[in-house]
Length: 157
Image (cartoon, rainbow, N blue to C red; front, top):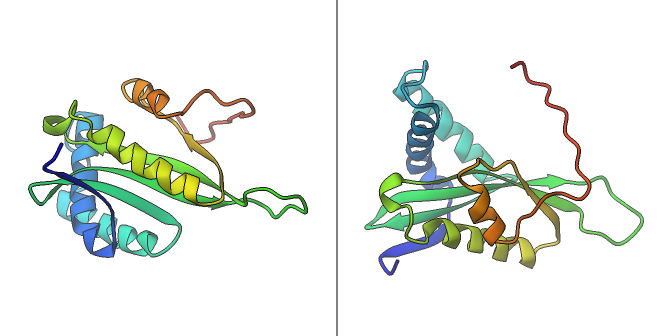
């Protein structure tokens, strides 16, 4: 992994992150999306630029100057409390490493950076909805079943 750099993404990384998001979704959904690639990339890049300047944090992995992985964290404010507690939680999502770079420790390195960030801030909890494939990696990096979480899916099937 000596040729890999893990770093925090900035707004100038939006084009590379959008391209990797498209690659991720093509792999995840096993095929071409109904939205033309150029249209998706333009919209996603704009979305990323605005979010990276706001409540989203992104870490990326670069090898040979090319982005080959990323993990996203959205900071979610909690309602203020009169008792001492962390006022923010983190939603972890869009965790992806390109197939040719998997199995080399990149995913773990990305989660290590995310965890370092979370521990250095007053974050209450990190939450994630992992895939079956990613669950063992998340567990190795400190994630476990929730003690107090319920969910109600509301999106149509």
